[in-house]
Length: 117
Image (cartoon, rainbow, N blue to C red; front, side):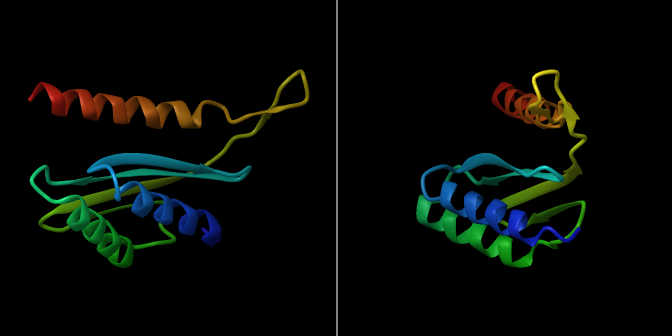
């Protein structure tokens, strides 16, 4: 995919988030692509162990793919890369064609499902 900077920012952000959260998501957007995904640690894992686990996943998950998932006993991570369809709006700004909203909606559905179970 050739956007190593976005992958680096994406994975670094997830590791930073894992310092204080056992589940989180992020998205990194530039004009060409969006890298979006999430991680989740087991509820009984300490925050330090969660961060260590997420760091381990960033080392083993395949990069430069359109999508990938990695799981170990204590945590899992998934990401997806989409090409942004930039639409120039009437005011000259850029609209990313709803690519971000679709991901957020699917994550919300997953979280709600987890909370109801």
